[in-house]
Amino acid sequence: MKTCYLCNDPFTATNTSKEHIILNSIGGHLKSKELLCRTCNSKFGEQADKELSKQLSFFASLLQIKRDEGENQIIKGGKTKNGEEIHLVDGSKPVMSKPQFNQITENGEVKYSITARNEEELLNILKGLRKKHPELDLEDAKQKFRWNEKYFDEPISYNTTIGGDFSFRSITKTAVNYYIHTQKDSTQVKHLFEYLKDKEDLKIAKHFHPVKPAYKREGNEVIHLIHLVGIKHSKLLYCFIEFFSSYSFLVLLSDKYEGKNISSTYAYNVLKAEEIEKNVKLKLTAQEVKDFYSNLNLEDFKAITEKLNRVMAIAQKIQTDKEASNITQRTIERVFNKYKHEPKITEQMINELSHEIALAYVKFMHRGNKD
Image (cartoon, rainbow, N blue to C red; front, side, top):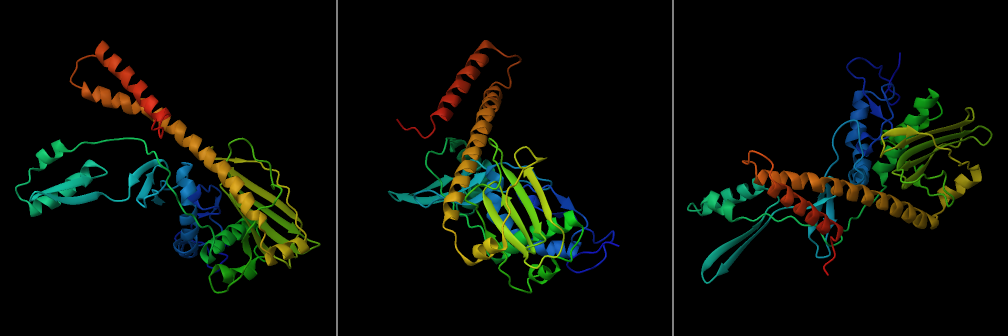
């Protein structure tokens, strides 16, 4: 009978769980029902996996990745140069983190300035004001409100930190899961189980960016990758993991490995939502592994910057193409809503639609250009 490798409880109809070897929240597709029970899976999800997911959610939303369950989250924490906090909806649409409300007194008269993100939010603010000013006419106030939509014309900065105890435990779990899933064995990694249960502190997962790329990157692909290596004569078992073709890690699963030679690779294109083949050229010696875990490689900063710049350029193209395709649809809805009582499409409607679409595209193509 199959059992959970962390707690040894047998799998039953009530405690079986679907374990994503790469987190579902970042577009992971590879999964198994023969790794962790529901309790262990849930505990890991609430701690280590949650932290890693939070750290990588920026890329998941920005790239509009597809996943088995749930939707991409709002990207929070953006800042303008003036310190205003901005959120990104659907990975690209900037919105205020909260409505703005100001009270101004001029010549003894009290005036209110409200900037809301949607009509429902505006109505709630107005209802709150009416408690203080019962004479306030909500419909009249709504009619005086003016909606304005424009392209954001200044940079938004985000700080992301990838790493820490919880995240490295989650990354190690990915490596352990992949080893057990592919090799149908847990004996060579069972010494790591206490670490995964947060009962032991190990330094076996570390940022790792080879000077020479471990594999060939094709065009605009963005992938998650796991590359497992077992070397019998040097007693090494390690796993190279990369998320979003950007953040790479080395996990030393064992330096006392007693199994067979292994070279197993899993690669998943998160943009096309499909598994692909990758030829990974990465074979480390015991001395190279020892040196790596004892030294800080300054070349990492250069390597990760180059990879991040590449992925950000891909994300920008995705967002640009998405907005271009949405312009026509939004304009059609706006113009035809204006003439919704017309019995048929008129030449005036067609001319207005053509003009509005052309104007929208001009604004889009010259966004940020104030000249």
